[in-house]
Length: 313
Image 1: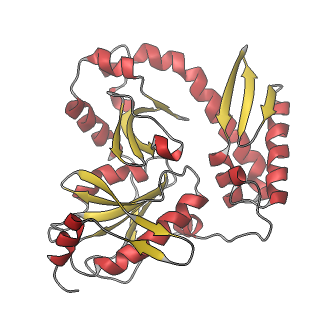
Image 2: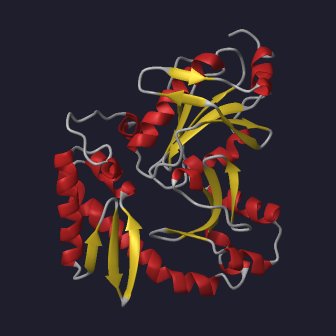
Image 3: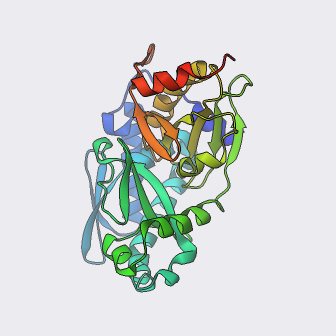
């Protein structure tokens, strides 16, 4: 429950920081930049911090990294823990870079990476995330990209399209293996709204694959949810969904939309603020907005037809 409260809590500072450092205040954003620089100085690494990015020269090569996820994490844990959070973040980034050569060697055959092979959700290119690169990644819905990844001891590395193609294994077989491994990453599921067949359920976890459990949503729905479910995946640590079992789903939709936007803005590991409809394995983005005070929802005709077929609460 503590992690769920952190994910859904938070407040706003009177003096906002720069957009790239949201939701930090200006004072915290400046302190954050100083803390990042101090960590990289300690490592003896040449670096340049820009607007939401940092360029780091290491081993003779220069790479640019985004700072958004680290900003969100530091905003949640508080300044006293910034040092350890920033240190761990760069430890993981550099471990991933160092592991690339080893992973490339293991991935010469699928059996070499089978046990670490999973699927993970990322923001789509329209949200500043990944472009689909079949057969290693594909567009699940607007704003969502699903990607095959290697779950390493200290980091997650995305699969290379050329590697995946070289195996000569069909997408469905690869996905079945990835989902089987994904099931081993347990999530804590609990209702977070008033009880009922269409109540909102939160699946929360500290690991990076909680949101990816949206790909297993069909296994969580009760038999009466014949119209599927609506869900949000605001960041990597959370999947929130509501079964479409009765007309109580209308209230759940009105709750999910602002939750999705708020948690997306908070992070860390933001994925999408959007509301999605899961039905028989397909995923559709629903037209919904939340401006901080009002919920706007204009569902398509097929969704309205599915609503009208539901029983009363």
